[in-house]
Image 1 (spheres, helix red, strand yellow):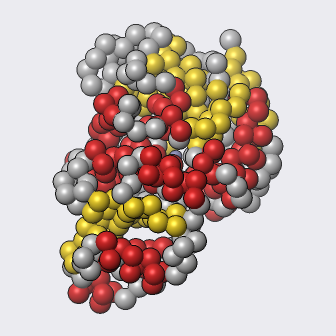
Image 2 (tube, helix red, strand yellow):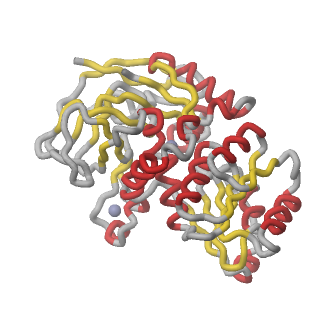
Length: 374
Ligand SMILES: [Zn+2]
Ligand SMILES: [Zn+2]
């Protein structure tokens, strides 16, 4: 038996589908038949060639993708439950972490598994056994030492797919930033991350949620996700005016938490100036190297500012993300986050469309594109 893996041939260009033998899971592993894979902002960075220092000047047999869900195809010896202790059987729908904290270092010992410096990541060279190491293929080989969770029956694959990346990261980040009941949150950028942040913050008891974006369609979606104030960069074209808008909405004191989900470094100094004394700035958006900003360190000191940056998450966040989706699925329009679904064989078209729509037009329709395998 063989399965397909999508291999990138040229940055910004086409994928090729290659067939590889489907492996038997070793003890402790799970072979997964993927049903969906998401195209995340970071996948677009890789595809465009903005991570060349990591993946080389020319993509060499590059496979990637990390947002996904699927069904248990085969269980390795000894795997009988998911990471919450519930029974796990062939055919069950599951979501899982795409990275592997070592569990045996001083950072893991502190309970911060998402920050583990020895965190294992999938091999991204096509043809490396066990072949199915990333999301853009028919199967995924979930190695021993994994964190896996059953997807609640009430959730569609489209809603469950971004849970192991955008939603878990936002949920983890907002908790680390100390967002709490009655707080005011400013969300910079209403893409997939920002919209999830609005929903999570609402559920965490935030009193006022202020969202900034450039595009009216995204602002409308932010309101549908529960934003109190969705403010347009077209109407507030300067940083000074946006900072003043936040101050006006907070009696001149600023927000408890400001979070960057944009990924352009210019937004950081602006966001820092929207904080109340003792507030927390949460940086999530910057993922491609070279996002340098400058800021007066004395202003940080005088403002008693806390800075929190978040990449990945501790595995408990994925369990909470799935529970959150089940609990609030009728309250937030999660089904609008994944807007376009393409078959795996159309992956090149999916990336071109997602990239074009991200940059040029109609971003509402393409908050997230996804691939269907089965
Ligand atoms: Zn992602
Ligand atoms: Zn570790």
